[in-house]
Image (cartoon, rainbow, N blue to C red):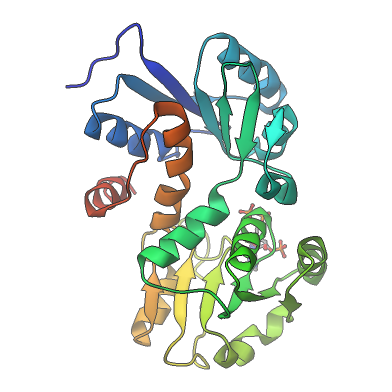
Length: 277
Ligand code: ATR
């Protein structure tokens, strides 16, 4: 058993609510695996308290934290140093505090998404990717796909949000929400970034009848682990990539910043976290 001593390195995840977060499980799994004297704790923080909590954590010697809904934009505002990805997103999900007193931040969701596809041997350069959705998650995914040389097309129930996203990214095509099912045949990869198919929501019938046989289908929803979209794809015999891997991969950078070790995403970790879903 790994005990926490007076020298322990401490990190946290801040959200409101926070009970649903799987991040403590996965970071503490890595801490145990690597026998690190440290802990990663969930903190339920209201929006109005967020800035004070960040300053308090810094003063108390925390190494850093993850942030989730609703704090990603506020966290960006708290940072002294951000990278290009964070600037493009206008939000961050990973903060680390350095000894010079600075708060660093970045958004690791997009890299996590791409790493998850690469783990499944999906290459993205010059691939035509259709993104369902134009919210915050779509923004991370779209930016990372562009960085990797993919050609992206965005479709969204509210067309104006898709138009805004393409404007902000300076790249990408748009198709109307009512047309994506018919247009699917021209794409190599389909990614769902909407909440459609999430547990507790109405089941949505994903119609993949026009998909080519080579289409790769992925979902950033991971509860349930096999989403309605992935089920529809499996029924058609298409290659699928579960969203859980994105959660695991996006966590790696923070862990390495706080605890000094680059952790890996493997079968044992995936099944351990999947058992909590
Ligand atoms: P996130 O940060 O997780 O992306 P978000 O910004 O609230 O969350 O975006 C949610 C996405 O799911 C949006 O693309 C939203 O479409 P709208 O922009 O039209 O709201 C999409 N979405 C949610 N419920 C939907 C539904 N019932 N049908 C189609 N799209 C839906």
